[in-house]
Structures are given as C-alpha cells and as structure tokens.
Length: 130
Image: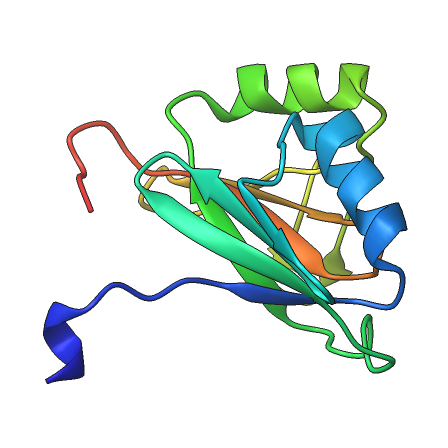
C-alpha cells in the first residue's frame, strides 16, 4: 500500500528557468536531474520536483515544509540570501518577525518562491522526532 512509500512535493513554475535560478540563488539547490519541463532536487533524504505550468502561483496553501533544528539560524541565512518571510495577523494566528510560535513550543515561518508557491520552515519542540 501507499503507506510504505515515499512521497514528495511537486511545485508548479510559470517560468522554469526563473525558478531554477531562484532555488539556486536563494536556497542553494542545484537540480539533480532535468528533463524538458521539469527539475528534480534532492533535499536530505527527500526529493522535490518543480514543473512548468501556466497555473503556477494560484494555490494559497503551504506547498512544502522543511523540518529544521534551528529556525532562527535558518531564517537568518535565508534572509542574507534575499528570502522574505511572510507575516500573518488573523484572529488567533499571528506571526512576529515572520515566526509563529505554537503552544507546544514549535515554531514555523513561511515564504514564497519565485513562482508564488508558499514554502515553510518548521522547528519542532526539543525531543520531537518525525
């Protein structure tokens, strides 16, 4: 069954060359494999793809999440590369300087890629392992 198989994000891009440059410049990724209309990237033990489509940037949800050990350090490094983190203020959900802290101590931050995809960094509480 599917419960034993790996799953990976597949992110849309209106301009694949722009996306390729952004992922290299902002996040430090180099495509591990390229085929017409699609890029494949390795991220730790995972992979994700970026594929060309005119419907890129239309989703308003989080498309991919990286689990990080030190959210503040990762954000500092990404900000130095020009990544801008989003701030939200919705009823009981608010970010401060791009970070939302949950009651259990986990912290999370969101940013957009060059194609309008919402990406996320999450730091789980000490002792939590996924």
